[in-house]
Length: 312
Image 1 (tube, one colour):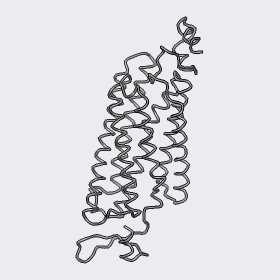
Image 2 (cartoon, helix red, strand yellow):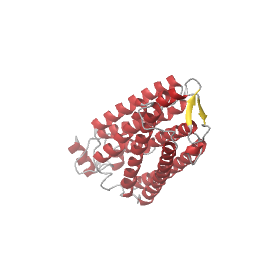
Image 3 (cartoon, rainbow, N blue to C red):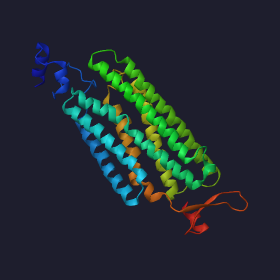
Image 4 (tube, one colour):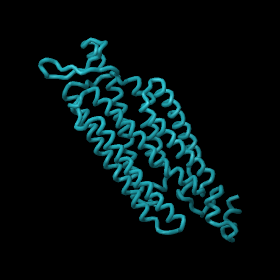
């Protein structure tokens, strides 16, 4: 089959455009858009993982009525579409539609995960009090979601420019540079968010509001920190990958993509399946300031002060 395709390409009976529109097996000596053939096993595995995580998230946010957690399910859906595109590419490595599906979806999917984390941090600030944060919960959501949207628009514009130039066999440098600018902007915004989240943790611990223990609150905070760390590492990787260009070392070696994008994103969203905010965020909390004002404690309407201390 591959030898027949090669001979048709050589004698001109099969055009490059037809090769990219159809489904043809890999032909040695004829490069794909990836510069390799994507792993079918990896594609199926990540489709299953993100699909399961999406279904579990849907059940969880419907059950606990934490509707804002739907962003995690949406992110999983976008990841699922991207990895389905890569699975398609494993069978049809030259198909341009499959390539564009995976590159456009997998670069934006983590934005939904970060949106969920922005809301989650806002919930923590509401619980622990405004004195634990430089920004209000509303500002976190508006500022960082706006930054993500700007980043996505820039990356989408760059991707469109690069795709158009590639289709007409032109220079893709302008589009690639635009995409790099978008993802660098996203990395900077995530860096600022990481600083704000670290400042929140420092203030909460220094004020005695947060104790290092296996309580629901600290467990969920740990899950949030792990998810942020995974997304941050992935953002650094994608920045370097795109900065190297379409023929760079990272983008032409799938193992890096599997380990530093796919696996990290499964961990970033899957951790909230295990430690779901709907189970672990306390409800109906009030704030009480002791008379000596030396510390701020969180109490519930139903629990006594001593009972609270055992839980947090």
